[in-house]
Length: 145
Image (tube, rainbow, N blue to C red):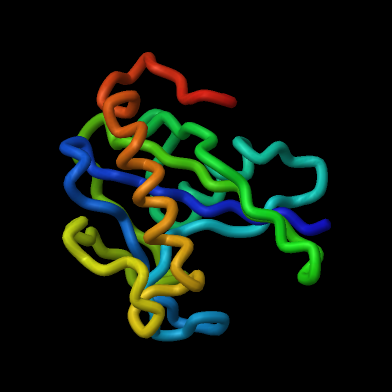
């Protein structure tokens, strides 16, 4: 079963979420979270930090990632690990795979005409809102980490 990761990166104030505008299919033209493929022999968290750096230039020193949840898609023979992190400081993001931007959180992330993932982004944001206080401290670990 092929593994993928999705990275929810919030700014230091937790009032903006790093998004990308997809330049290719699937979801070409829609906004999405950054992430990618988990390679053979690579742990989920190693893959998450690698993909984050490759796609955004955000390093492990800039953010602590927490394993938030997983999705398993049996008919597509894949799973997705979702990681969330709050930047420790302002960083300049850059990447050439997709167009990166910071989104305000007052959007309808369930709108599938604007956002990839069949409403999953909205679902994940709602879960982050339930544990947001844990992310406001650098030393706190989320359940299951």
